[in-house]
Image (cartoon, rainbow, N blue to C red; front, side, top):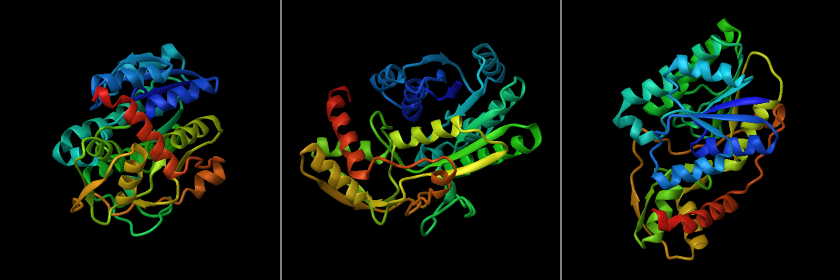
Length: 311
């Protein structure tokens, strides 16, 4: 297959490109390079990606269409987005421009070429503050601006599938953990505090379905490889949720350091719990999460300590 990955030099994107290349696919990464990450981390991701990276903005529809045609892509995996629940509350205009209008641009670029297969990366944030385990039949009710933009992106993808003959798969990854992760996410923030003997801020009652980045990219690869028609939606999560206190404890143990913490209040735009029922992906994509949470934490901790001198 010839697969173009937008956001291919980001956290999930770099892992996905490397995974697809290892499976024998021809892969091209299309990335704006604007991720909120230190330069050394961007360089590490680009090297790990193991695919050619074309610098480009998803909002530049004509350029994206040109890249699709020249690469002769048969599938586009759309990861490029502004991530981060908290930052979306501070700059909602930017998030709408990238996460909503960016989807419009991707659809237009695909429609102007022969490409009719899109895999869209949504988010568990679309479910909002659900009380229990959620599956794709549950109505999305995002409580924050980030989740709202990802849900709007989903709706645009579904409309394109109905009206423009595009075959689409929408994947909703739950909290992703792994090497080269984002500095604004809990694993990095906690590891940074632990390494400095500072207090880890634990949100009272917060629980997350932490899912290994290796399992997530496996799901995206399967979604691209297996034939389908129309539009399908899948949760991608481990199916087990853990408290932030457990994450902090496991990180401290893996790093061989003491844990100091303080309790904080969860912001109103963040859900108390994320918990995936991923039986749909297991049944129809033959996908299974393989990396247990403690192993994912140890893997991240090992990577973080090996690179801590770069921070």
